[in-house]
Image (cartoon, rainbow, N blue to C red; front, side, top):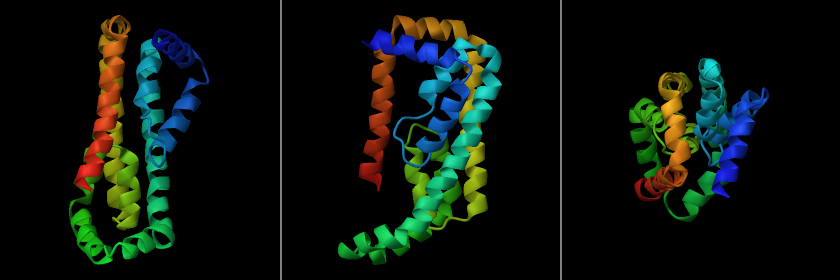
Amino acid sequence: MLRALYDWTMDLAARKNAVWVLAAVSFVESSVFPIPPDVLIVPMVLADRARAWLIAAVATVSSVLGGLAGYAIGLFLFEAVGRPVLELYGMMERFGDFQEMYNAWGAWIVAGAGLTPFPYKVITIASGVTQLDLATFMIASALSRGLRFFVEAALLYYIGPPVRSFVEQRLGLVTAVFFILLVGGFAVIRFVF
């Protein structure tokens, strides 16, 4: 089954409309969707290395725009949803301290989440909730997401065939590591926040 899913993903990645699918996934991943765009970036670049830079650019722009949507969710839905929950649990006073700390380190927090497997959507929404300076948020998002996706594309562009061979020979291991990183990111959220 894993091999069939891999083959399907590689086939999808080679299609001309794959870049639109990547744009949609990158956008929604930054605000609500749990699966990162890397699951499409890797096979898309491996399927057509000549489009590596286009793929990285589409993922970056779409991810930053999706991050802006996540920011809006945090900014506009906090009063309706977040505040009543915090007040119910008597946590509203502590939220002020969290907001000050978050805004003091906001650029680094956004950049860290943008570069790592940490669920970026949590940070985009938190940035809106805390009203992190929008310019700081956008710059940190663009730099970190761009760095992540362009480095990934460059590595695949320059050493793509060996990577593809490695992935195909160790598909189970690669899949397991991916899910460990994904679940680990959510575990960090649970224990840090």
